[in-house]
Length: 130
Image 1 (tube, rainbow, N blue to C red):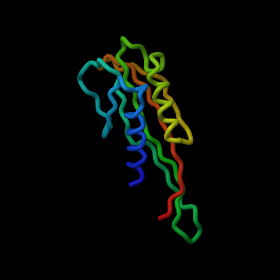
Image 2: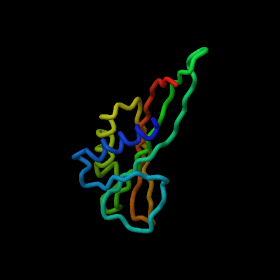
Image 3: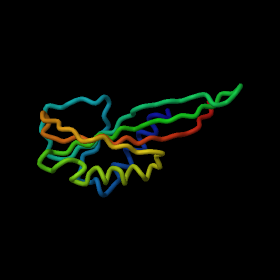
């Protein structure tokens, strides 16, 4: 299945990044809060938005975009994922997967986790023969 293969490719790329070796990287299906305080930066990877359209007249060929969400949680004592450099390292690793676009949300505070959170979303676009 295409959606999981792109998500798996992003996950494996992040796991293989030496710059992110001090972070815990997990799949997030579905996103759920855990009642613990963080001691390491945690990175979660999950499928996000998807849109496919039929582009062939009289045929079955689709073109679409698919997004993979990468949530970065950093302990508040480390500073935000943006200021601690974790977000930069995630973006560098995502660029290896050749996305057509990457967006980064403003960071938010997750006080119950004692963490800051930022979402990096990588968008991919492909043509699919059906």
